Figure 1 (cartoon, helix red, strand yellow):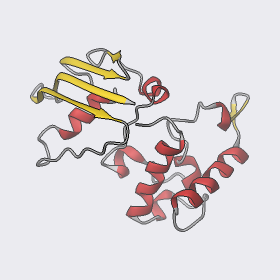
Figure 2 (cartoon, one colour; figure 1 turned 45 degrees about the vertical axis):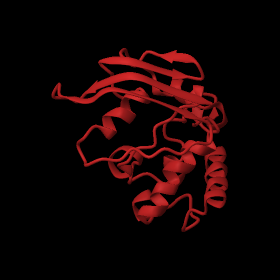
Figure 3 (tube, rainbow, N blue to C red; figure 1 turned 90 degrees about the vertical axis):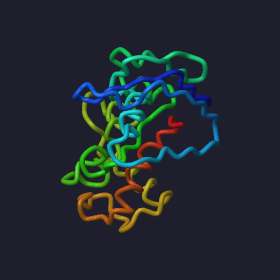
Figure 4 (cartoon, one colour; figure 1 turned 60 degrees about the horizontal axis):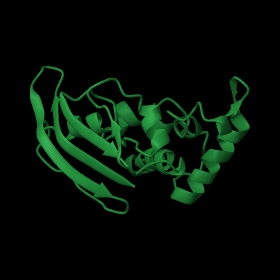
Length: 171
């Protein structure tokens, strides 16, 4: 898997340029940190790459195939291609705190055939999936029916990460 960012420029909701002509490459297995003072464009950069926010200009290539980040991009299509966004703010973007762990575990993936029974959600499959993620990612307490608000911050983040990595589609 390879992700190439070329001359990416992104503005915030006020029209202020937050990312100006940024370029970099990532290859499978690499871990890269993007650091800076809050409000300096890190969030806008990641949102543009993952299709949540439109970019003003630049290119994003995923495995050599372009993603038109200057137009509307369907985040679900990007997830299917192997790219997903793990939000920094799990409370406002990553989770619905009033939902159970099992419900949060499929957010964004609820259209996946493995979670459906015709047009309805397959609650048994969703519960089984949640129990598997709980074991695999050591989510505590091991209760898929527990409201996500009742998990510790670290375990809430595990729920978000398990949802992305268990889908087998993220880079």
